Length: 538
Image (cartoon, rainbow, N blue to C red; front, side, top):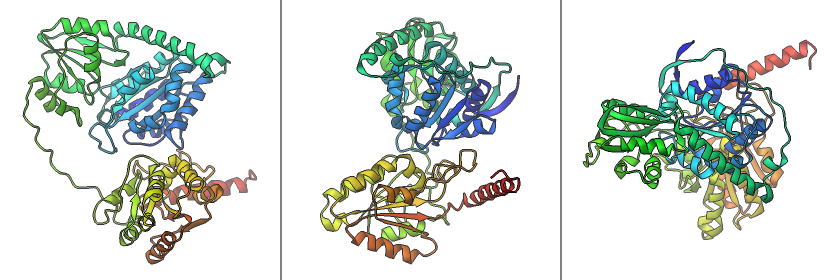
């Protein structure tokens, strides 16, 4: 049995490889990104989708074909994929389908810290949650087994601490190979018209009740006998904090966080004098356990925010009401000194633009010295927000409104906004700036459809951003290098703001950090093409 030091993300990738996953798909987002990258490195078939919704739909199609499929995303990505997620609970699956939702408590690199355990109950899908890398490996394999047994997608909920921390992982050898993909027609199960969806909903509820009963005796939920004076119910990485903070306590560590094993929870709570639910994020376990009539104690509201730690768990168990000390201030993030966005933000600042921003490295333009973003909410939202401002502001203010979006984000969810722009154009027109640095920079320089390279950096069809803009009906489309001539970029922007037309400006310059790798990928592709020509293969 191989033992290696792996992060939680690497452990999930190893489980996918060892478990015979046929296809891994997703969209890069911290802290989930490394799962598919590692799976590809291990020899698995992995690919980046334009966004999380498409990724889940591709994986769902693969599972309809009897294949094992893995789809990965960060917590806000599951919002994008929610439409197929909810209905996939009705359709079920033929092959195993595991959805990794990587939550970010404390918002290390996110715009919110939503707790995606809510999705399990809302969608009606089983959810597992590991506490370290070994469990990430084991539970990923268990998730595929559960998915195939109950013919349901299974959500594997990770958090930043588990994704990025490393611990020893023992990989299994000789696992049985999954069944070969094969399509079996089942129209009533997979075509969700109302006549078929109504019985599918009833069937789902029967499956969930069966899963609840199964979870009562599942070895995944670990009851550790300890002091009768204190019992703690917990899950995820918090279980590790609890074991260090209160090693003497009795502990019920839940790996199946939905459906909950209510009978086991009732028995555990009744076996101790004081029972406390300690969980990171929202009081989801506490509320569900109380709703079942089980008397438990929860955490104070102040501990709902950010990551838990051993010290914070000690304070929860001690009922310590004192305000928490302010965390030490770290160095504020900033655009790289040679970032190609500098002249763009300098021009926006100088022209006093009202800027609807988006998600990516360029979001750092909100900080001094530019303070160049006035709103940033979600992937792709910059286009719609900018249009809304243009529609309602007085003309002189409306003419100052600009939407900015990155190349990867544009392909992810900016296209719908672009269509809205030409379909419902504001009277003053609008200016959309696409900051094209040739990579998905903030999550680690991943590829996307606009780079012309796959997840493995192999050549593929390249989506043209300017071509898309022209194809949907934008007549004023410019492609410029803002670094080569900042004054010319500022002049162009001023002219487009003054004209009552729809305008797309593609500000194209490679990310300074990604440029060497981009050149290497392009040289490798050219060498491969030349070798093919010489061999007469092209």
